[in-house]
Length: 118
Image (cartoon, one colour):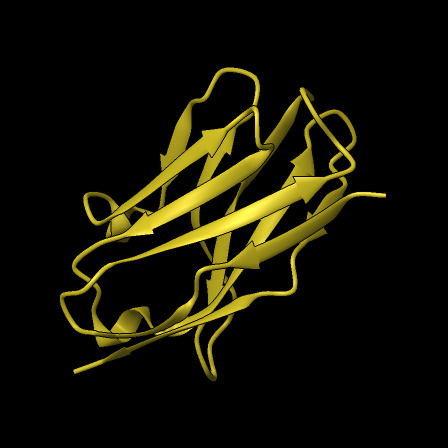
């Protein structure tokens, strides 16, 4: 059973930073993509960033490049999202996900709220 548990969300003032964590159980050393989406109130869920678990290649939403950094810790089976220079528009629920590349099956975490005040 694949499970993803996010942590690290909270409230921060504009210009501040947060680091989100996503601890994954049920899959290790696998051909997966792991990453983050977010959903702001009244908006559709949007892609933030992802990392290939096999070779560490990273991908970002164009609008977030330079401010957000995704990383992984293979030993802890955890993926992180470092968010810098946060803006009120970054306020959203952030969801961790895992996609099994071979099957396309996707699993989601429960989400963690990030609130950025001006």
